[in-house]
Image (cartoon, rainbow, N blue to C red):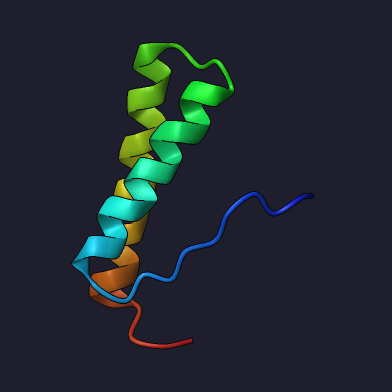
Amino acid sequence: MEVMATIEILDLKDIAAARNIARSFAKDFGFSTVDQTRIITVISELARNLYFYAYHG
């Protein structure tokens, strides 16, 4: 599998950056608006959980 993007979640602005990357990819891959929203929501929640609950590793 090819890595298309990586981002370190070190502070709150990184959550927004992850969301923006997800939005761009979802749109570029031709997902519907509803599916784009779902993808962005999943990435945003994952990034948020990483920031608040994954202290290291």
